[in-house]
Length: 424
Image 1 (cartoon, rainbow, N blue to C red):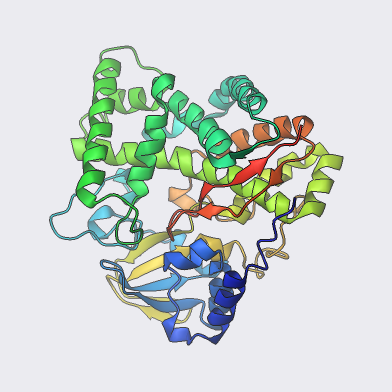
Image 2: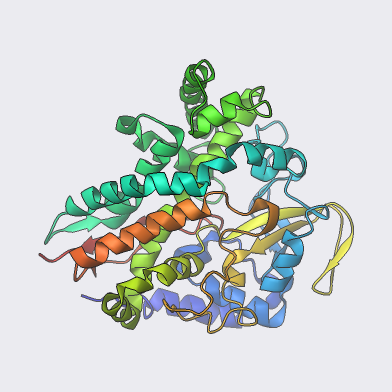
């Protein structure tokens, strides 16, 4: 069974609406475009007509911001962090400003140099080539076990049974977190990104913070154990033993935990689902892959480009400047839309096609660029590579038997459910 997601009447109507909208009214941060999967049409218009666009959101705490939609302009922002700040005291990395008095998570991705560089350096060895080599057999063994446990001839949720399970197993390893309680990490990751203002189903802010305090309490116990033991190659031990981070405040520890949990979860989890969906929608590419499984090496970065699991990052201008011919004022919010850059035909050949044997598959911005580039990118790629190496010989067919359900967010581009069936 092949589900045709492109001819859904609601999607077609939304695309027609996008083409008739006034340019001034376009707000890419409206999560409904992501729920409908029509945000690509929004970005195509902006790249063509107004690539540095003054946008406005009526969502409380967002308001006016600049949408940067072309690859080269985003690179201009990424490589000038002294002009475009990510520091949490200026607003951080998401478009929503926190109300006065509300606790904001302090994490090193939402810091500027030199503090950003110092804290990042503490945990960056987790993704060293030596660690990746040591983990490869463990990741493969777990992947085989998960795939072999999947039901046959019945519908199940790929997001839960495969994407969440595999990423959470790895995330627990990175933290040396008890495997039997690993689903707590998934829960806390979802709490970090939950937002009541953009998703009515999200928990109330006080409930969200109460859950994150439970996370902090659990990880404080782990910290106290690790700080009194010899240093080990896990993230908690690294933070506890480094002179740079051992005296962090509780809120800064909570923020860095949130960053590392979400960073280790969302990219891989949503690419594992997005890759299956992309190959379902592009059956000729699946035929190519099955005929030549060595194409997994270029398939993986193409999945990550195609999915772009984090759609944007925010920066805040520290001074008046010019970008793409527009005057950016000190204090203005700037959204770097990675999802749009990954469809920019000035930099990527045939960007609207999913092509598993691209000549330059790593030319994408899904991991960011420069000082804030994702630390765990190689870990994510290794997990995806092993998944597809083990999946191909096991399952001649994986059927998608229903419409995917997407995360209601313009920040995390992901999935909550994907119903599939494996004949057998």
